[in-house]
Amino acid sequence: MRSAFVNIKNLRRFIVIFYTVGLTGLLLPFTFNLFIYLIPWSLLLNILCLALFHEGIKNFRTLLIFLFICVSSLAVEIAGVNTSRIFGAYTYGDGLGIKIFNTPIIIGLNWLFLTYTSASVLEKIKIPSSAKIFTGSVIMVVYDIVLEKAAPLLDMWRWDNGTAPLQNYLVWGLLAIIFHTLIKLSGINTRNPLSMVILVSQFIFLTALALFLK
Image 1 (tube, one colour):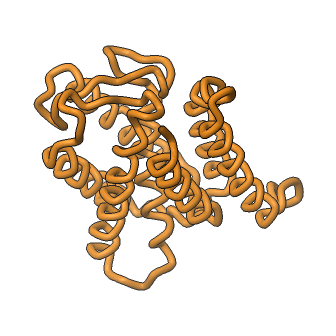
Image 2 (cartoon, one colour):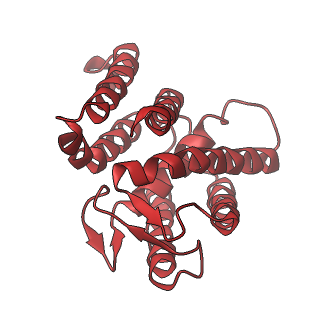
């Protein structure tokens, strides 16, 4: 039914244009603040698009696993930012929207977004599940390396010493492995025709911001 209203090729083009406009808006000083405000809304739009084109079975178990990833990752982030003992010492800014216990509520959805899309792009590749778990987790860590360069520029978060410690990437990798393993053990099919274009567009978007935003 959804294809009767939305052409997947046109939606892929829209996503590329969407990120191009977003990049332009953030690089222009007079539109920067507006586009900062739109960051959490853009993540919600991405998740909505992914949900509409999710090819796996949509049942209570899938919803429960996704909810667990959101809630547990948010809980870890809350503990991390308030104790400085998990990822390192850092502080969230206002770029990710409404916060609870000094942590943006949307950060849990971001963990789900990254886990889902990194798992999805590997879905069609015929390799063992253990290799998919490892590769998907590596994708998430590489993504975070780029994200850490762009995050302070977008007022997402800042590290107390100015740079992300090795501890942060190790914990990121561990959480990524746990979440990918959970999805595989639950038998959730993450195939989605939009995952690749969204993940790649976002990666290029963040890379360009890290390089050109001053």
